[in-house]
Length: 240
Image (tube, rainbow, N blue to C red; front, side, top):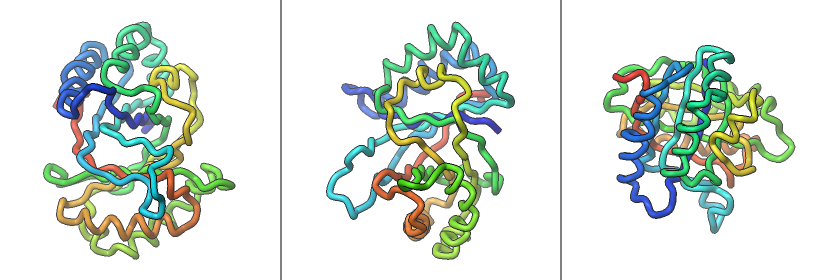
């Protein structure tokens, strides 16, 4: 399914609790009032994560995240209708500045592929792994080689594989409409190439490190740009 991803940091002056309350009850409420062409809207509230690697003394250009938005669409027409509608442009988009540091938002237009349907996830934790290609590698390069990289990483982390409760990959696609980028207000930072989401039992989180290490050892990704987030899903639309 087509999916827009936006990794967000809260605006200055907001506590994390205030931020979560706002995006769920206010921003989410605006969406529920007029969902337009949306098929599904999920907020991923970040509870932990790691940015870059310990090989670097500072974070550099990596920005911490507080939430990741996932907007699902059944067709390109539904997506275009949503982002060009006056309600989105005059109500939804301006509201983003009330809770997010829009200049640092990272967004991508993707196609999500479900590799293992999430099941038994009520108490599971979702890990979102954001990957950026090494200089000289293209999005097509890393996407084409991902199956082998993933298989090697699972072999390096058998305890994680045994604890998997769901797995999806989201491959970045060219933006179909520049209005999408304007909507989120993101900076001209590195483009998200690939995002992998893994649902695991909470006691298996520690085993993700072996998986991550193997992925980065492939040499296809900029280790100083990549990061992973540990999240709790909250579905806004359709209401549950």
